[in-house]
Amino acid sequence: MGEFVSGEQISRMAGVSRTAIWKDIQHLRADGYKILSQPHAGYRLVGSPDRLIPQELRWNLNTQRIGRAFYAYETTDSTMDVAHRLAAAGEPEGSVVVSEGQSKGRGRLGRNWFSPKGKGIYLSIILRPALQLAEIPFITLMTAVALARAVEAQTGLKPEIKWPNDLLFNGRKFAGILTELNAELNRIHYLVVGIGMNVNVSSSALPAHATSIAQELGERVDRVALARAIFSQMDLAYSQFLEEGVQPTLEGWRTFAGFLGKRIRVVTEGRTVDGQAMDVDSTGALLVRTDHGFIESVSAGEVLVAR
Ligand code: BT5
Image 1 (cartoon, helix red, strand yellow):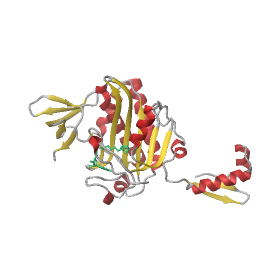
Image 2 (spheres, rainbow, N blue to C red; image 1 turned 120 degrees about the vertical axis):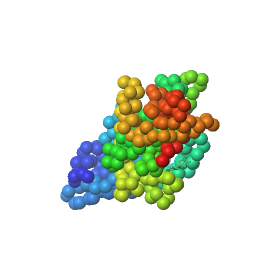
Image 3 (cartoon, rainbow, N blue to C red; image 1 turned 135 degrees about the horizontal axis):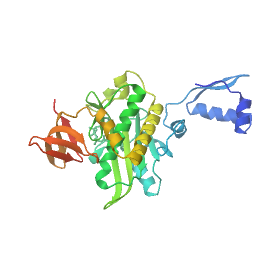
Image 4 (cartoon, rainbow, N blue to C red; image 1 turned 120 degrees about the horizontal axis):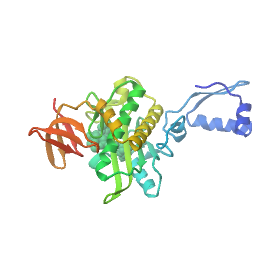
């Protein structure tokens, strides 16, 4: 990973004594960093811990907005709740709350999100876009595209996006998105975008119809590198949205949306829409050609794909 650097050199660069450096090295080792030390040669970093901690997440991260601050936990109830508290107290957009595990991870409509410690990525991002309420689904769609791109870049595996908030491999879910907002009538105060991803979880530990990236890839995945890729892709997609609008993201979405053209059933707000999945519109709503020949636009719901 690195080269040997002498204690003297580090002490000169950092402006502290060699004894202080030696103590810091012991702390880093206790945190899981693997550091070789050799008389005359100095110290050499040979391994970083597989932990989602701010100093690791920030390393080499060239984002404009996403990741401007990190709040990291070993465990918490839900990163959503922490992010809501921070946002309500004025936290600017782009701040990220991340936790190694969650005791009350949640999905939509009060569902549960299984969050085993140290094996997944569970995080929430605060955003403050100037959007109409009807445009909020676009943020979920944008997040799905960013996640799919990050996973593809890191693993070479191409995930499928299932509208509105699932990422799948071969029909099995490995990631979900939860977008929550704090708003009054037609003014958004802030959004919290939650991301849950099964990374190194073995599928026997997961709910039915679920999988993990490691399960599909056949090897462990570097969670820190993947998390950084997620921040970069989120940052790119969000900047692109603010500067160019929704079109580039919609085009990206279509390349991952394997169910387009297929026969689907959407269960939404107590009604069922049967038809063919056509596209999404600029707000992120799904367009379905019904059996009566009409195009229906659905802004939230659950999609079942016919076999
Ligand atoms: C979602 O909801 O897919 C959104 C999940 C968002 C989780 C993140 S983790 C960080 C942040 N903090 C939180 O508390 N939440 C967010 P939904 O579409 O409603 O799917 C929930 C359903 O997925 C559950 O009812 C289960 O059937 C299934 N499920 C639960 N845990 C799963 C897992 N780890 N992997 C795959 N499927 C799971």
